[in-house]
Length: 75
Image (cartoon, rainbow, N blue to C red; front, side, top):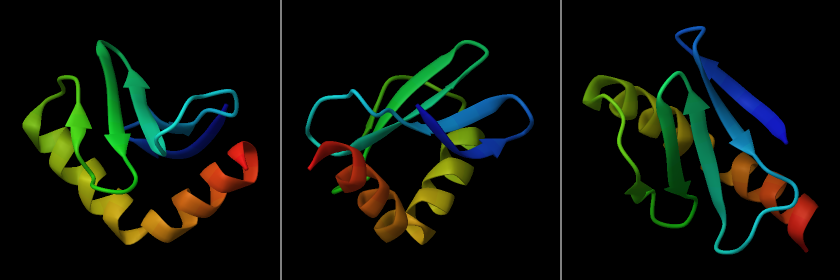
């Protein structure tokens, strides 16, 4: 698994090498385990709204890089 970014020194945004389609990343840490679609930015799972807002903003800014990383491991 590749940690792409850390949030609040507690949460990791991960691209997991042996994962399944569709393209997505995981936000993990503390009591949070969220899946974020790289195509739609749809969120599956629960996390504090302020954290999700921060993470989704970062993912949107780096979406093309994250998709490239996903494809590197899954194509």
